[in-house]
Every structure is written in structure tokens, then in C-alpha cells.
Length: 99
Image 1 (cartoon, one colour):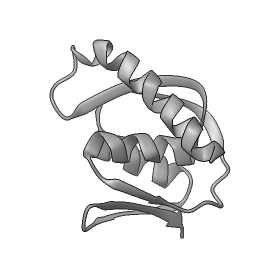
Image 2 (cartoon, rainbow, N blue to C red):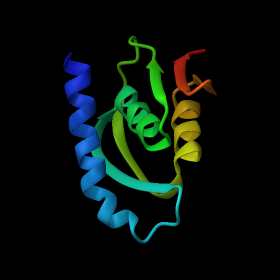
Image 3 (tube, helix red, strand yellow):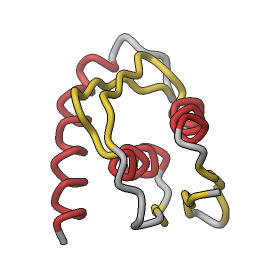
Image 4 (cartoon, rainbow, N blue to C red):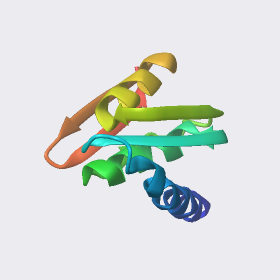
């Protein structure tokens, strides 16, 4: 439940930052957080892409994140690579797990 509430709050920040996205080309996003859980970032990417997230609950890492006018898929892959995670998209789901 805490994860859901945190993800909803995070999505609220993304919606708030949509005004800044007006300068970004379609299909790109930008956001900046001083400290965001990796799992919540992937929930944001899934929401932006219209996918349902299936994120490994054992992911506990957090970090400052700043993506400026970046395609969501590039940002998601970059984050997965930084944390040695497997990222795949199938049948309307965004799957994230440890390798």
C-alpha cells in the first residue's frame, strides 16, 4: 500500500512537471527528483507509456534522478542499465527485475 501511495504522489509530481514538457517533443518526458526510488521511477515510465508495471518488489535503491526531454524508453533503459536490471515490455506490461 505504501508503494502505491508513493507512486501516486510521484505521478502527481510528473503531472505537475508536464508544463515543463511542453518544450519537449512528443513521446519525451522530463523530470527531476532529489531522491526517488528506482521502482517508483519505473512505475512512472509505465504510466507514461500506458503500460501496466510488474516491478520486482525487492528493488530498494533510491537516487537523485534528472531526465530532460528524453524518450521514456531511453530513460527507462538507462536506469535499468545503471542498476543492472532486466527491463522488458510484453503484452502491455513493463517488467523490471534483477538480472
